[in-house]
Amino acid sequence: MDGQGLRVLLEGGQGEVVEKKSRFIATLRRTESEEEANAFIGEMKKKYWDASHNCSAFVIGRRGELKRCSDDGEPGGTAGRPMLETLLGEGLHNVTVVVTRYFGGTLLGTGGLARAYARAVKEGLAQCKVGVERLGLEACVWTDYNDLGRIQYLLGQNGVVPIDSVYTDKVCLKLLIPLEEAEALRLKLVEATGGRVKWEKSGEYYFVDKDRMKS
Image (cartoon, rainbow, N blue to C red; front, side, top):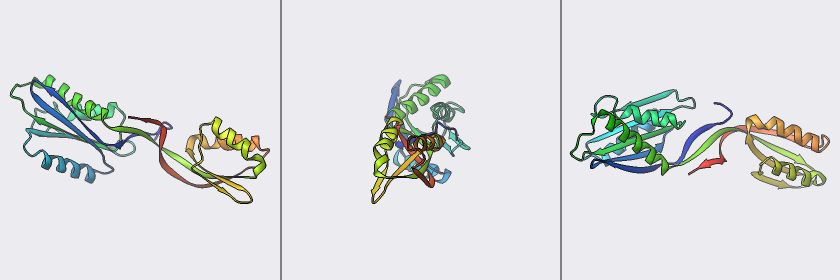
């Protein structure tokens, strides 16, 4: 994973396009494994049992290690592949999309089909909430009350909001920040307090970077 993190679905969604009276309904869901992806595809096929086709594509893994797509009876390469390429083009991971087609009576041709399935995925994505998942470092910053204002100011300048605070004879500000930014921030805090601040790591966790969320 690079420093920019992974684009993932925070909330799935559904969108629809109509092309020459054929309906293309795209439904997207976050899936963490091939089993989850296949279960979702099966669920959509059961829900839309009367549709002409239920084509699918998914990308699983933090590096997109597992990719699959299905044309579900459409001409080869006209559905699953353009759907998968749309997901990859958006840089999404751990996501599955099913595009349900209700045939409208007019053939679209291979190019028209490919464009319609890709458009449907984009329309579905427009109805999803997408965020960036990053590897973060959780740390507790220990300080006395004399340095608290200086530290809070410095955190604000760096766009860091403590996820928790504990006030006793000293103050612990619990932070969760992108891993690649942690050391630079620690050095700034040490410099600002003349080395009085204590930095205690408690673990590394994946988290959603809300500043990089979009609807």
